[in-house]
Length: 481
Ligand code: NAD
Image 1 (tube, rainbow, N blue to C red):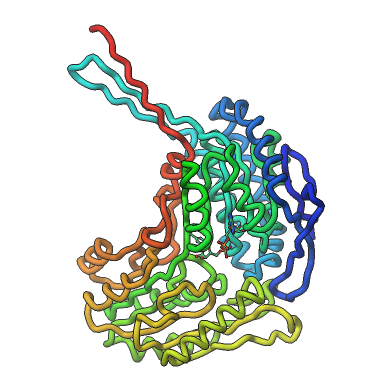
Image 2 (image 1 turned 135 degrees about the vertical axis):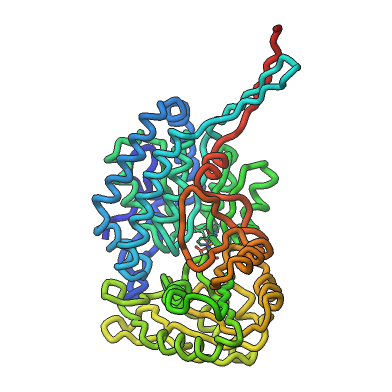
């Protein structure tokens, strides 16, 4: 494995305190590397480098900025295979998924914002009859912090960094301590692409020390965070009194609502993915399945028999599910399954660890379907973030809408129906930032991305991200006619 180091001011270095954390491979359960256990000193060093680089980077022409970000995208494409192998090993996700989704999306993030920055413009408002013109400048904020989780490591890390850099900011970024490797490889790519020293600084370490120091640093003016709702609430409590700009992309407990008039084959194939892709560790997974009663019995039989065919195994093999991220997470998921049984849920399939003979200490779990009687039960209300879905029938639109909206979260929702009127009624009333009708995880990078309620504050994506990473300044000029 590549030796993971911090990347500060264009140089690779260990944590100033010399401390390291072990990096554990989920597929084998073995320690396979170390990463720096950085603290506030390293964040301060990174912030100083970013501050120094800011005046040059913000004045770099749009063409030059765009060219550098485009080169980063090209290099990610060139290194798709080694990056995918590293991601799969570090995270436990199937290699095929990293090859087809994670790494291509990381390069798309850079390519998209390399182009978007050349199209970003500000507004002018002429106050007719008052001899006044207003125009609004959009300036980069300065040094910004980007903090990302482990489930889609390079995909989500670049989804923040690319727009922050495109808008002219310099960045102090921290990937998850559980999946540091592709962030380290990205630093090598940025160096090769000619990104000037100090423009992007990557610091590794725990959330409670390195992450917390980003949020607390007075010289880091905005924080873009993706992770758990509890962490997001804590970050908001630290950053809000400092008046930092905050974007919080948090947890989800998304409904997958299936009507009898849907395209059954397409729904079934997609529902398998929306339930178990990435071992169910995608914030957008549809972990609460509601099926119209007329279809319920046949859906239940078909779905369970399709789930039975899903292959769980070492992420480097041709499998449908690899390993979950950690032993702790595996135990947490199992405890939710126990809780579901205690609350009267029936495990239709799964519910256990999987013994993979060649990797006996890996963190494997069976894809699990639990039939529930009451949508208020814990397993249907709290985010599990694993290969576990609940299943429940419904009789009417009103009933399923109420059940769908009954959770604290509001990230995404999927609806399967051929009735256009119904899909519009749902889209209007469902409490979520994203609604997919007859599809799932279908993303156009220009569209706003984010959640409501406990799923977050603010939006990423397209111009929303460039707006977040810039500060508008209005200039009002009165003139003589
Ligand atoms: P987490 O909140 O534990 O950690 C996320 C990141 O925050 C990590 O880099 C961590 O080190 C850091 N962190 C932890 N404590 C911190 C602190 N006090 N100050 C600053 N940084 C701190 O989340 P996780 O377990 O890595 O990720 C899983 C969660 O992320 C799930 O809830 C999932 O739904 C959510 N998620 C949301 C989205 C979205 O777009 N809404 C996308 C992916 C994942």
